[in-house]
Length: 318
Image (cartoon, rainbow, N blue to C red; front, side, top):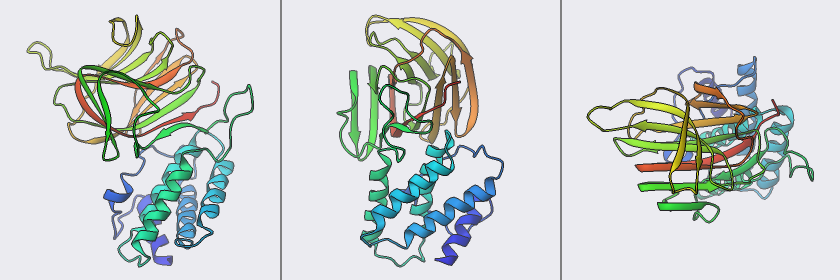
């Protein structure tokens, strides 16, 4: 396994590697940049942990080793980065296992990945104290769409799970919500692939019981007089999810999206600030104090979009 550790560390230091992970199995790596100063040390630490865990594939101790290693990550990096590093760790673990030179049993390797993903559905830091906020970096929600959409409240046309992907089809409109009304200070992370050439798709935060929310809208309209691509931060007020919006545009800027390309989207809702990132780059941010808590969700209008790995992570109070 020494060779595995070597080329894996090279890859995450940004140097060429002789092997590329099997993306059909491992997916794409998280694209957000580490915020600590000593990036090389952190990446080397996570690569070493992944290599260590690979030695327990097919053994009864694997589940316990995964749990203890993940707890170690959350304890060592006890800020909003911890959950992000947790995602990097499972990707690195998959990367090690599916190196073509790895001769471990394929069925056991798949079971190991599934066990890791199962454990990721709950935070190793445990439930929040009664009456208190969740710990910073705790996972509030995660859905990899390996089963149905029973956790989601879906209103409108269609949203269904197909082959482990959440297909959101707004014909004309669909809104899907999940989470708790009391949620505050969190980050939504999700993989998105827009199928429609012209699109109107959004990530929702601070959604309340009347279905009012902040809407991060990605749009490209196909009208003859308007064919621009943009990201827009909107505050809505309405009478139910599908009954017409009071539409308050807070900020907008041009932002093209390539059709059919998987993107890592992130929306931070922290205090009075909503900030949007795509593939690790900060795109737009706005200050607005109208809504201070609420559920999260997705919205699509005359648009087909594929969604995967929808995650909500607790952020510190500003």
